[in-house]
Length: 165
Image (cartoon, rainbow, N blue to C red; front, top):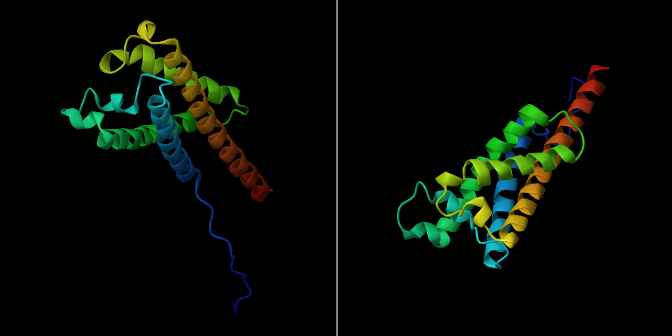
């Protein structure tokens, strides 16, 4: 350090886009796994494997390999949902938008996209336990994505304002 500059001992923080990516991936993997556990313990009649129903042939999709691939696919799709949230709602504080995001995703999957998933009964034919469990899963997923992305946005925005001053 002959020129007098001091080298930082801390690693460079991740960019906002990288944080959104990891938040989405982890959220999809984690809450997809929780969804499988809810199915395994009979809280819901819908397992993550329904996502493979329209596209994959064979019985493997209903076995352990199908479950693992389904959860990974949920993680990948969740990255897209996280970027959508960051593009539209990242500037708004509070937990309500995250909860609302989860409800919108639930309605999208169970009312709009339901016909393309043969493993999901029509909404009105689902059991009460299934509806309550899946709504709760979507709520906490939306809360996780929304609050995590909003928090990171606020931290980055605050640091940018401090360095600009």
